[in-house]
Image (cartoon, rainbow over all chains, first blue to last red; front, side):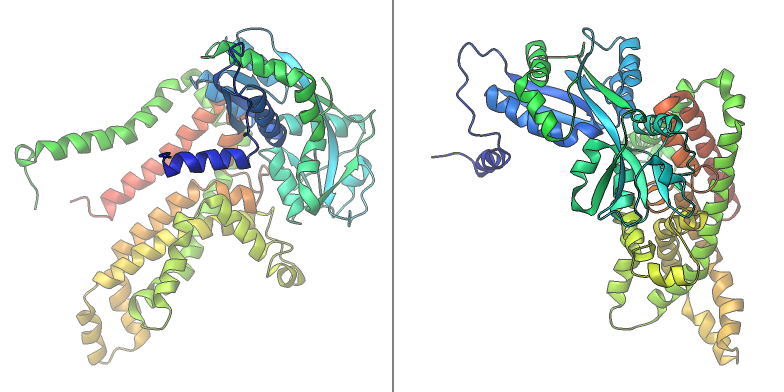
Length: 255
Length: 262
């Protein structure tokens, strides 16, 4: 056996990631090549799982992710980055991609997300709802209004009639979680999915429906796609039973 | 000694030109893409002026702190022989290679509410994260090594015989330091301070991680640029140009005046 160590290592890694064993590609399976997916940061954990399952289903296909804040992804795409699929955390950023003429067809909503209050493990400050965030002496961090999560948080606070002065407006929703996880801030408003992936150092306090905001995640095939069939197959996979199951496992709601 | 142009090897000229272009092209990109008609209104928007003002305040404060603590540190590193000196020197330059975001996390673990010194600081009524003081601290952490390294090199290249001569003539330690060492060290001090200030002015990662981002308190110009990029890229480009212009003016000015343009 004359496989190079590097190849063996790659195979081992792939196996460890759950990508192998893949079923042998049947001649009927036309889905092959690498699908480049630009996806919003909040999708990171769920998409890694979905990507692995997609590769397991289509043995000849590989999925490569670029995770970042939705506005950053739009900037990269408009500046000529090559990608097959774009998944945004909100409609306005998808609209920017549409306006720039980057999309092959109409975007489809594939998942939804809701807001939750993130607090330290055990909820040491006994926060029960949005109204508590206005308490004096409480250190609250929010995502900046320019970021979808920050805009949604503003909407939720407005419908709850609560005025909060945050100590910081973070550049992305993950930074809000980490400030709370490190104990520097007492509370923040993030997505349900972020609380779940935040681990044991944080806990979530639900926000009731009338005050909550439903964030819709649209996905689209891009004009720059090099493997159109594979791009479409990945989107179909997300909308299908297995993709929806993967997303739900990380706290995402149905479209 | 200066070589004339025609005697410089062609290979060196070509590589130098490529290296120069590498710095000029991104700047050109900003200049070409800048929304000039809206330039004045973008730059004088109140929010942007607040960030500019905060940036100047924090970067100058960081430079002052770096001078107060960095010069003695450089002196100890250059002049004293003690066990662990090499380790200390490596530690001092660590922030230069550390990703600034990691530096920010490390600062939180040291000075944050749950950090090593957090409870003690809180007892004194001092809260650093999410404050302007925190932004200054983050900038100092990242920028001070540039001053220490420059001043240390300056001290090493200093001719110690002048100091020895002053001492044999009866000058005390402080007198030698003030009247002989520091004046001879001035060029390195200034070069180090300018490098330190420039690095502090552009600091992003450690500041946003340790001090957060709030307009007027911790949102320095680089942070404002990053957020503007998400909503209005035009404003971000103009702000970047403003930052570049301020830095360039100072660097060119100082270079001609003190750093020996001859």
